[in-house]
Image 1 (cartoon, helix red, strand yellow):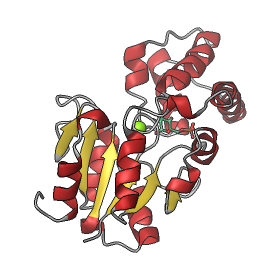
Image 2: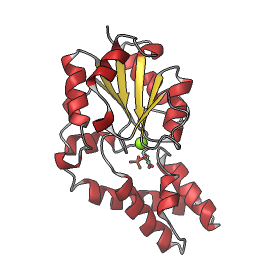
Image 3: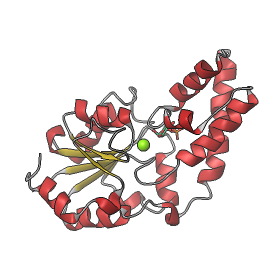
Image 4: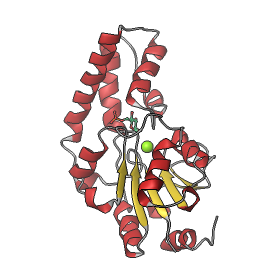
Length: 220
Ligand code: G6P
Ligand code: MG
């Protein structure tokens, strides 16, 4: 039996939300806008463009198109400063165990991320060669909760959507997986990710028996 396992990146494989937070806060504060951890939570899984739009909405500001573009680039530059210091020690607990298990069992493994920085991040943490396919923010035209990113992932893995499983930490990502007709597995809090088929606090809580049951259709 073979399934396609599609991993989100930010919040599932690595905790980059803290770096997004620092970079967005600097930008927002520079515009005289407050930026809290609660607001950062709402940007999980949200594209870079949409994130800046939301921050401006919250702050009641509008920018010219040129200024908008300039600030997006500036935010990313700041963010890359943190990313460049990343290494394998930042891989979240038991991600390596699950990836190894899936490879032992000859399962399809793909990345399905909204981030345009996905490849450099995977390179930094030395995981690039663990994925049979990578779909990131450069490959999609419609952001999560649109299922496009995961549907492209399934196609690259040569799997039908209903034979794919998505690991996601964001509500938008779980909705995208559900729309794609895939099994959705939330990584995080049950009350936030209640639309997911299953929720685990993190990968340390996910047993190999559970993964095997998914692979052999013993749970659906
Ligand atoms: C992920 C993160 C978001 C981020 C988005 C785009 O979905 O959860 O917080 O805004 O990727 O990332 P990028 O690296 O392209 O700015
Ligand atoms: Mg995420």
